[in-house]
Structures are given as C-alpha cells and as structure tokens.
Amino acid sequence: MGTRDKASNKAQDMKGRGKEAIGGVVGNQKLEREGKRDQVKSAMKKAGENAKEALTNVKNAIAHK
Image (tube, rainbow, N blue to C red; front, side, top):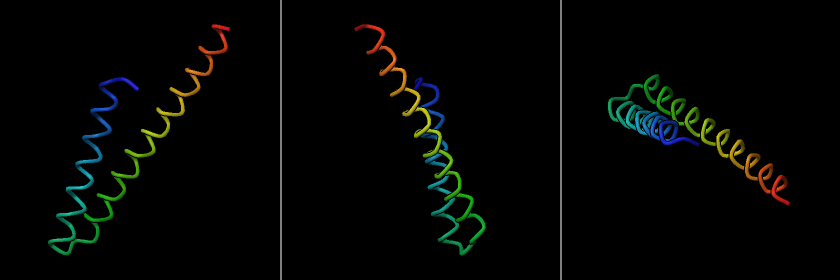
C-alpha cells in the first residue's frame, strides 16, 4: 500500500469518526450512519490493499526460489 493510499484511508477513517461523533452529539442519525459508512469504506480499502500486498509477497517468494 502506497503512502498516499494509507494517508487517504486514514483521512477517510478520521472523517468518518468525526461525523459519527458529531452526529451522536447533535442527535443526527443520518450523520452518524454516514460516519460509520466512511469508516467501513476505509477498512475495506485497507483490507484489499493488505491482501494485494500479501499476494505480491507470496509471488515474490515463489519467484526467488
């Protein structure tokens, strides 16, 4: 995962946490849901990048045998 991707995912996660917290404080359920959705999207992207990186590592390990 590139540095830019990591930063983007972290920003999306933090934005989601902020939305969720503000939505909870002001009683805006829609904003809370949007925040949770942003966090899930960030986690999904991170999981995909981690899987991609793991496959690349396996491919490289096999190629170097």
